[in-house]
Length: 282
Image (cartoon, rainbow, N blue to C red; front, top):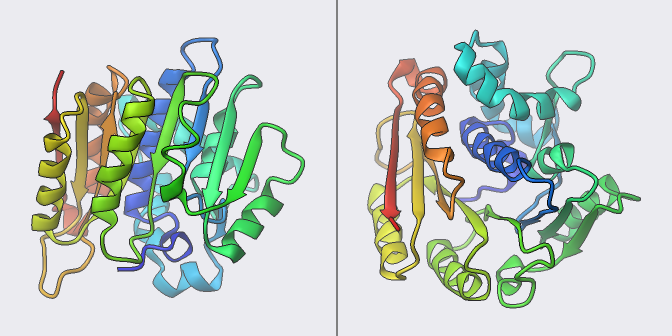
């Protein structure tokens, strides 16, 4: 499958992924000490939902558009507030048109002492990303194959932060690369927080990934998943998942409040399902 960000901006997977991202960042901000976010597959940074690629799929209409229009329960509204505030910041007239990707969401939340490093391999996307952050001294954009950074860019000098891994799944072997990159990164920076996104298309493939993660022996791996429809033949994207290594201690509890609401809101005819478990505990 091709999960290039521009085609799927603001869809149900982005909603779940970016909710988790903002909850992790909110937790990091509890301390005054600086942190760094390393975004390995950053994309363009921001997306025009009325543009050709986003309009070709229209997936945002069943994603962020539903969430923005929903009457959310107060506890969930509070947990989603940082995420929705970042979206509203790109749409000051109140009409949803622009969707911020992870670099823009992260940058919206950074304090003066925090930093963002964003990597993007696609030449056109990397150039656009650099243009979007021109003159921003807190952000560093690099055109590079992110699978090469795990042995060279860790740990960050702040010794606090998040590595967000969100590959486009354009090539086979992405699940294997994710496991290998985590093993390499964790050896260099065992105290860092790592968030790995993955599509749920073939359940067997996802379970194989989870078993491979468990086999690494790396502790404290939390799995968060949401599906919006049943698996189908031929396989199509029907769910989204994220594993978080060294998650904030509040993340599991927060997502147990959020995921049931999102599962009902974002799924086909309210038939969504969610899952939270530990691939590896302490």
